[in-house]
Image 1 (cartoon, each protein chain N blue to C red):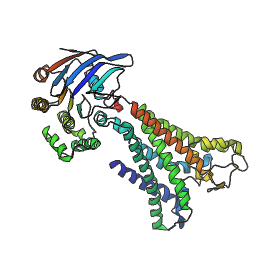
Image 2: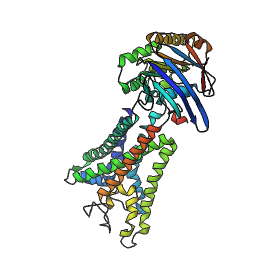
Image 3: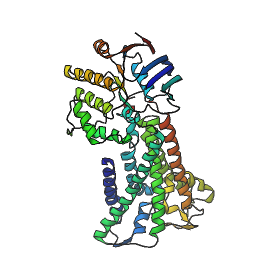
Image 4: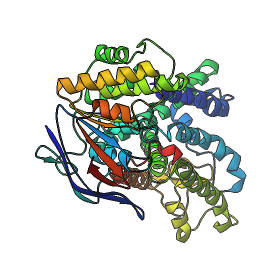
Length: 270
Length: 210
């Protein structure tokens, strides 16, 4: 329960620091605008946006640091006493995955709601019809992304060690952001858009899946400060991408948990 | 209840830690295991408990085979040398967390087990603030709280004072009288001679009856 309280507190703090601070000067905002701001819609694949990107990405990183040992901790300290009582490790692991996923969802919802509540104190917050699909995609894509990478930290820590557990996912994500901001070097110098034959750079980049500003829905831009691109980047594609990351992390975790041998007392001091 | 190990072998890397170990143990008896540090006593307990897979051989509880019919030994209470509990939780909270896995006992049984080991169940201090002796006692409490049918005690008297050692001896005798199968690994020749019905010598991964 202590961990969940910390997650909720972090969600509230991020809602105020990231969401509220970003939109405090706007007299009237809609809930879908709040969500779009959180999904990097005010940014583009250019190095000039690195600060804006990092500001909105920090909550996701902090969550991963906080929950990166949520499952792994059972393999430290009292692991012997825990797992001599637990006959079905895979069933236990899947239950822990479900708890982790719900924690991811709670964090995202709390962050948005806290930001919205804080904005309500200084201005007007409206609920528009677009919030249904924008909010739905936001929760789906971001929760699966967060779940996949956070679970990845736990699984890598267990299978390898905690240093690798935190370093590998962090490096992948930071490199994703770095490469995303460097993509402008491959873009048309006049329009600033990537050509259709460079679309693969967007499709394979894990960070790009979070950037609603370059996404399309049914062929139309979700929201773009620079207008439509030459290629589609459907939100459903990103749902599939992050879904695959999540499924892979769960499968790898099941294998790691099932095969783990309790040779030492505490995995952290191996 | 009969616990049998037949030609159990295990190596880790290039080191053979268990070599064709064969044992037969029954309920209501105390089996002593003596051997130097690194002889394989703890690894033997881990293998018997199902915490690690064996390379060859078989471990059976009555007619059920470990790692085939069951993943871990059911109804097991275990104390492993130098294995502690979650340091940020109190003694009671640690045991409650563990008890919630099988859901066999409630808070009152946990409190009883903690009292039986000479500790205060209402002590809110985290385990990291306990003395070594208290840590050992709370670990023993977790081993007995669910009234297991098999009790594996690896160096249970470590860090305990004279009173504590006497309490452990009484505990082992009591468990034996209740029909529990007790496996006791100890450096103390006195404990082994006093308590064990049968004694095994563990040396470089091999086990033979003394």
